[in-house]
Image (cartoon, rainbow, N blue to C red; front, side, top):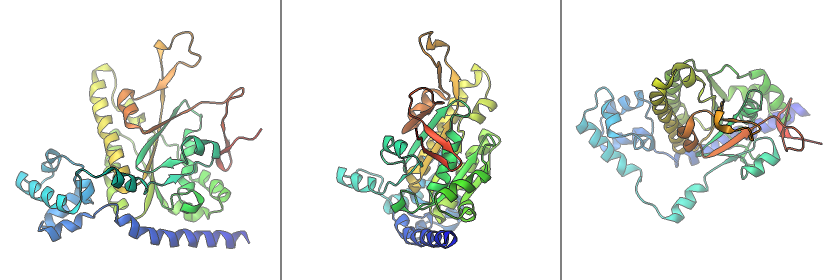
Length: 329
């Protein structure tokens, strides 16, 4: 009986995905459409090699960046940009049009009804949700839960799409996905197949993995990108105050890429962050810790979640074998 239910839900998920592909194409215009505007196919291939697969993504790059692509002169870049402007509208729109665009946002359940209510329905697409807290506070557990809940149909408060997971600390555990999938009534094998995973070892590797995602997201229905954690490699690769300015600039470029991916492909970005001690917190602050990354990271996040180990009468999300769920007294 259970096996039949899982098979039915799985086929339903696949069926809805096929229906959604047509809707997703309305959100972005593939870069190949430039050929119909008179752009050489070889130049389009150069854009794709640089990680640009949609006209929307092309318009998010400066001409300075585009001329840095080997084989593209300033004259070619001007012609390419003019052609892209004919395909996508990056000018002013009315407030009504902006509201209509916002209706395409999907909110993905966290597995906890209380947390979903705080978030206005769940983790939303076209936005960056940051979770910060000390070790073992539940940040990665939420990431694992979202890996599964994202694959639920829309009518079950899921995202009905695939998941990309960039791991900078070696914390991804595929075996944790199995009991979470069983809790949601999904086939664990199918859920794992819909997660693409990459282990990053340097901040440059991390950025290159983001560039490579465009090709996959332009072809397949992704709904969630997880970066766990966004700051870890920057704290390792840049040391001392002498490299702080350079670190923050590179971090800003990384975060800019994340928000562009979120808006270009209508995906939710969930990133975890570490904390640092705050010596200026004072003796009256019971827990003098603050998120790492400074103002650059703070401004990039649409929503910030602080995770802390519960005590007393604090409301907490209980971490169970089935992932994040509501706490029961």
